[in-house]
Length: 120
Image 1: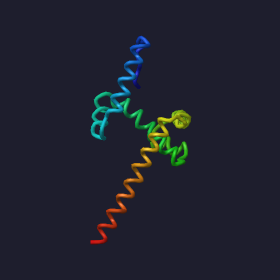
Image 2: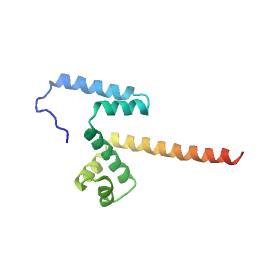
Image 3: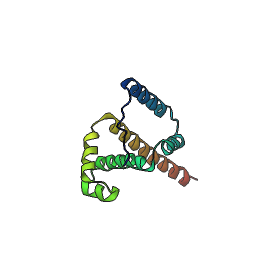
Image 4: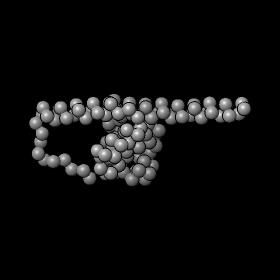
C-alpha cells in the first residue's frame, strides 16, 4: 500500500501543489489523456485503489450487497462501508452521474444504430 512521508510540507506549498494538481486534472481533455496521466503519475497499486473505490460506488449505487461487492472486487466490508459513507459527498455523486450519463448515451446510440441498420 502507498505510504505518505512523515515529513510535512509547509501549508502554503501544500495548498499550491493541490491547486496545481486539480488544475491539471481539469485541463485533461479526453480519455486517452486521462489514461496517460494516471498511468504516469500513479503506481499500479494507487490506481487499483482508486478504481476499486469507484467500482464499490457503482455497485452500491446499483444496490448490490456488501457480500457481492466484497467477493467481486476483493475488498473488505470495512472498505465498502467507508465508500458508502463517502458517497454522500459531491465528488462521488458527480462521478456516478457521469457514469450513468455515459451508459445512457451508449444505450441510445446503440438503439439509433439498430434503427438505421434496419431501415436499409
